[in-house]
Length: 325
Image (cartoon, rainbow, N blue to C red):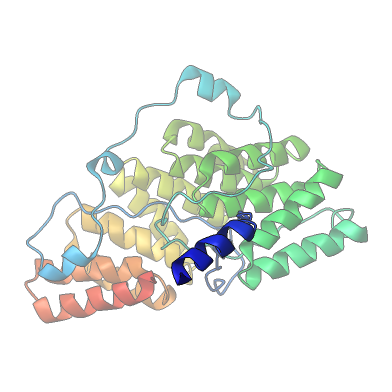
């Protein structure tokens, strides 16, 4: 009888309509800003091609695919002709392509030298708000704010540049290139935008195309440390380690606080087989980049070469601690 009553009640009660609920957006967090305002250049971490026996601790780190170590195929003629042509702006949602070499985090947007009209009026307040959102780690909201600015003024150089930096660090390098190309249409001689474009193209493996904005930036500002760093990293990515080391030494001598320069110089020496000097310089890089896992990972690798298992394990532990969840 009780079962019959339950069935009757079930028939009478109207079925509830299922409402589709959007899964909550995964918040993106910004890594702590560097101690000086600089262009963000974080190309991929490579493993040394000349490996020594390593401890079990190394298995905690994902191996770099062989395809990433080799130089990618040259860009097609069509790519070369159209790299500065621009393209449709990405107005849709942001998709992440997995953890980047920086551990899936992004840097705060670097300060851009702007024209007086850019930071005045309502859009100036919007730009300030977007920058504050990035600093507080509210990346999705910052992206929306920059896109709103561009909807009102498609020629806003800073919005295009900063969106390029953000999309680049989120792993959406093609979208980053589109925004940076659009920024160059507003100011073709903007050194910071040229450097950011070179960074995005380098991450895409389009080394030949990346060389053009680097050369243009260096013609405009021969002693610009960020432009020099972009060229040095490009040389490193091409496997020209001796050339990269010379370029990076120039930066380290003139800008001793550049953690990225120390890191890539030490890594270049590591690839050249100069392990003792590489360890010394990588220790300096770890001091300058305290929240970065890369220097500790390479230090662990270098200690493993010396069969110093205890020190290697400690370096791998520190690298893991900085990789995040």
